Image 1 (cartoon, rainbow, N blue to C red):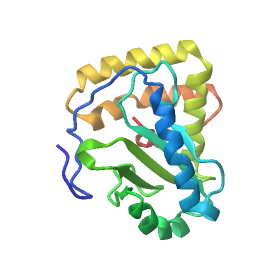
Image 2 (cartoon, helix red, strand yellow; image 1 turned 180 degrees about the vertical axis):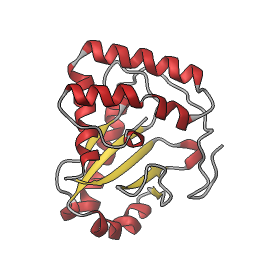
Image 3 (cartoon, rainbow, N blue to C red; image 1 turned 90 degrees about the vertical axis):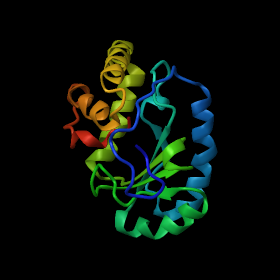
Image 4 (cartoon, rainbow, N blue to C red; image 1 turned 90 degrees about the horizontal axis):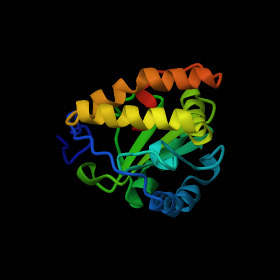
Length: 190
């Protein structure tokens, strides 16, 4: 179930995977430049597309995940009003914990984008990029992950949190294989 206000989103949201859509890259680019303009000097690096929509050939929930690495998370909180003015809904009760500022758009019940504002030197930011890059570079890993996602989506069709958490062991193993110590499992985009 998804509510209308921050804090009303719960884990029993449906999991609906779709085939990779090349238009996701364009949806990311549309937001990237706007986000760079809003966040400006707060950014410590490039705004990046992350998660399954950033990997050609992977099925995904049709929600484009975006990473905005910032110098300081506390200072970045000052950008919440400017992001809200651009249609980003800040989710202060982030289910993953306090390492990021998490936003969605346009509405909890009809999300098209997630924005993860994370300190550039936080291990979560490094893990998000490393997992994406590993999937892009390794066709076997990508295929195994696609099969796992389909299996888990069928098993946890009505519980997004269970679906996300069940992918944790795979994600952790993939990160270790590329020399990254995994942070908490509940941090990677679905």
